[in-house]
Length: 230
Image 1 (cartoon, helix red, strand yellow):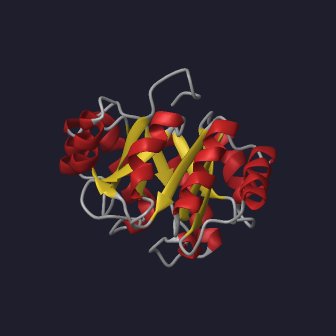
Image 2 (cartoon, rainbow, N blue to C red; image 1 turned 90 degrees about the vertical axis):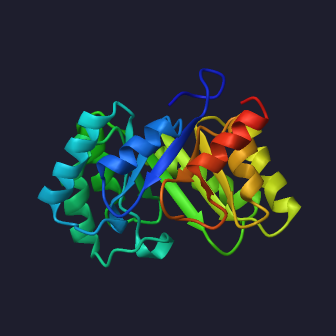
Image 3 (tube, rainbow, N blue to C red; image 1 turned 180 degrees about the horizontal axis):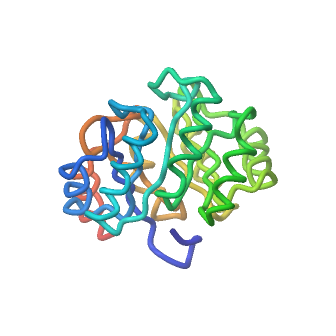
């Protein structure tokens, strides 16, 4: 993953349900540059079981892995306490390349960052708003707060209810580096194709089931990029 101007944005294939051989091969054949392991959706959340799955994933593909154990407050599916989530993060961080932790997870954020940095992993501080796109002042506060807390990359995913929301998100990319910016919902779908062209480091695509409103399948996103020569 590179800063704007240093390399092409990557597509992250979102793997849900479990880190299976089939999902990994679909990610590779679909042209993904990263894999996001949405561990909160996995059928088993036993640390040993998931660790084994991620080890197997690394044997199948050399694609970097984003470890995500999404909180229920920001769209996650697992019923885990914060202490259980922290325990799972610590067990799985060695098998990931990037670690995604919500900026709102104040109870465990610092501990996750410390664990990730201790293993020389990059940290993505993420913010998800499924209802609206906040004003620029709020969005910039989230960016600065995440950076101050030690994050390498800031991810902003917000619901787009109007063209003005989409423009607001685009302006962030022109003013900042090391961002992942995504517009959710029907109006935000275009951002998944075009924002990588103006600086967003990663766009996410589903391998099996969608994990966010407006998310495209890996195949559909690949076709869109080919259409625009990206």
